[in-house]
Length: 478
Image 1: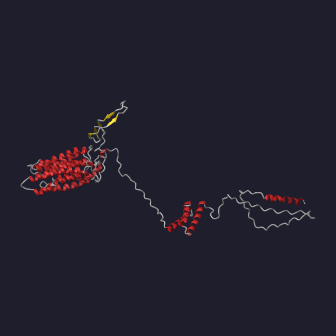
Image 2: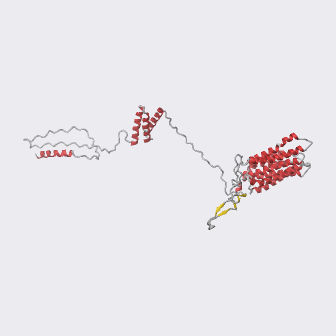
Image 3: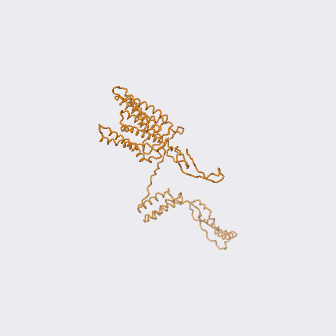
């Protein structure tokens, strides 16, 4: 009886325990698997107390275990994509929806979703499908896709100027060529060929006394060609500047011409070729050696040498045209006039070179105009020539002389301003420098003195305690 009362008293307690809350954060523990068993037999309800109450009552069945709710914050793997991150799953969903919109011909919405999927997962498994959808939409809407452009690397501006040893003397620096002019290999080739031809002709004139030209012509051609081939290489080896080459070459040309003319002047009757070639070779060699020693420290530019050559050539031709006006008794007077003309042209060129901005290109034009002016009167001479009179030669000579001078002056006027600032030595400004300070008398850095302007400057308070003005009388720039 006592056991029955105890069981009846425990029944309300089980109900109370069943109503207690369960911890929602507790992870459920999986129950061990067990083979299915038959349900337990249900016991009959307890009988009311009666005459058999002395028998013990059967125990009540155990209550089923409560089922705990699932944790809402647990992030367990999904069955569809257990290893994919959230961005990939979103991209796959967007691509799937974009495909549906594409099938429904809603092209703009499909492309928008595909672009979003491609941005969210540019390299994931949905990227290829998104690109395919975008490509299909572009084709349907007629949108031209951008083609990848080839990257073209810009060409680098590389300075290919050879590096020069700064310890070498500045006289060996080759100035840059002027605009439109060839390289500096032409002057040594020309002057080397002329000097070699003169020496070869002199040597060949000794092969035969009766006919000096038999040996002079072939020897002159052979040595001239050899010297023209060797001279540029010697210049490169010894690092001569173009101004030096022009100076030495000009000295050999005019020195040889003066020597040859004196050879003709020294004998009034029957002057042979050998008597002209020998002094010409000697004076050409001596003049070249002498000018070479001067060229190492000279400040003449190649434009200055071109001016000297042009004026010397005009003087030589002018000497012959003046001889036509004079009509001397001996023909050697023509040679003497030419010697004077060459000497005067050289002297004038040396004096005018520091004052005139010239370049070889400009002097070529001046020489051409002078030659045209000097040669034009000889067309008239062909029409007025008379063997019985010398008046035609005098008139032609006078016109030719005037044409030489007039053509040269006209050439200087027409070419004014050509290659301005290019007549420099080793890139250093020497001519036409206008950097004299403001003063009544000023000196520029090129050595030119001239009258300047009137300029007042305030006195420095460090030199004078009271304010004042100073007038600059003489100023110089070096």
